[in-house]
Length: 178
Image (cartoon, rainbow, N blue to C red; front, side):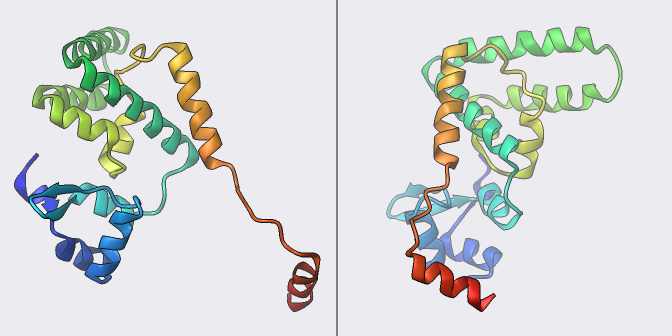
């Protein structure tokens, strides 16, 4: 990771056009991922930019969850996961000998060449470049069908609306005000 890719909370606040305290609050609430360097929080520029950008679609979030599970696998056995991704890329190049598919294949090749850290960042980042790359992922087959189903079930459960019941009087008052 390049040094300027990590921002201080103050720098993130400038990009977000908010206060430093708000950035710290977003970090503490888990809405903005960060790492601790010494006693200070550092935030990836990609995560700040993704926070500014409109939210991801449901499909993009689902793909992010699946790739975070793949990242967990990568942490356990990086060699095996990288080897499987490289085999998948070769197979995809063979299946698509020409055309615009080679653009994303070349981009994945570049990410894989950068090593485990770059791959983990691409797998887990909500940044636009990572969202685009995950749509054409070479990580098929890393998760078993059971693991995939478990991740998707957890994702679906996390998306359920947990609305609180509203008293009838308040509901009627709201209807009258509209």
